[in-house]
Length: 310
Ligand SMILES: Nc1nc2c(ncn2[C@@H]2O[C@H](COP(=O)(O)OP(=O)(O)OP(=O)(O)O)[C@@H](O)[C@H]2O)c(=O)[nH]1
Ligand SMILES: [Mg+2]
Ligand SMILES: [Zn+2]
Image (cartoon, rainbow, N blue to C red; front, top):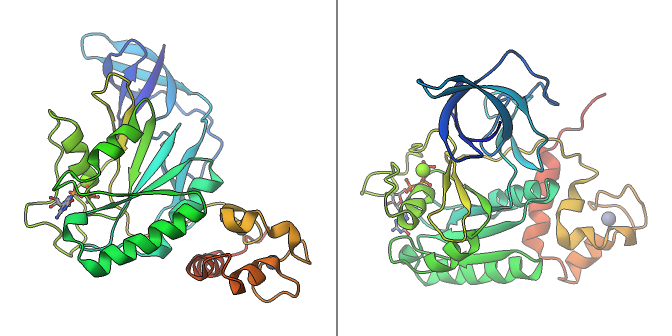
């Protein structure tokens, strides 16, 4: 029987069968997975084949993982050589960012967008806590919105507290499987609570963002949306950094849409767009066709990628 993984808490998985029954399941034996360095063999969103173990205890054995359509992968903060699959089989991802309490940097957003491009997951950037923004933050938002719109990314200004923009984001979730991610304290679980009348996910206490970067959500978990159109949303624990996996220095510019369309115009086909002669990207930055802040993100990410030694 087919089932989907809704939550992983270590050796046990919460799954839902294709007939809609929720069960607990374990992996039977060891099955072959492409990437043995992953810290988690199965992720939320994975489609699996199960055998019922006990009807009375409502448990099952997972015997096989079905091929993933896509996934979001990040470097494990503790072990740089390991990676962690955040979620699989996604239709889109919503990156939650805040310009205040806490501040999300553009660098963090751009790193996440690079991963979404690399794994073919469409991304929307949601700026939450709009109720806290003063003129300075609102101006910053407008500038970011314009910058991202020019390269094909949608942004939404939202406040879970005042409901501003919540309906727009809810509509974007219809009939899709959506990953929510972002730093701790940006309001991912609060957002899910507002769109699920009955769900009471744990969120940080009412004093709001404490500045300590505490993680309130500790496991990724998927929920079926209470919408006629259907859809699922995945809440995840906040992350401090977003370590890129499996992206080489040479291919990085392919995942910046505004650079990807120009790389064939560079004089050298192995151009890294730093100080090579005849570089079309550098020229576009000088002409302001490419936003300088995006180019800075590119350079910072490039610096952080170590060339693999084969
Ligand atoms: N002012 C304001 N506070 C908000 C808003 N949305 C959420 N918060 C508060 O921000 C704090 C953090 O919210 P959470 O939903 O726990 O954040 P999270 O992203 O799930 O955090 P982790 O689970 O740690 O990753 C809570 O105290 C919320 O009440 C908002 O739109 N405006
Ligand atoms: Mg949370
Ligand atoms: Zn170049």
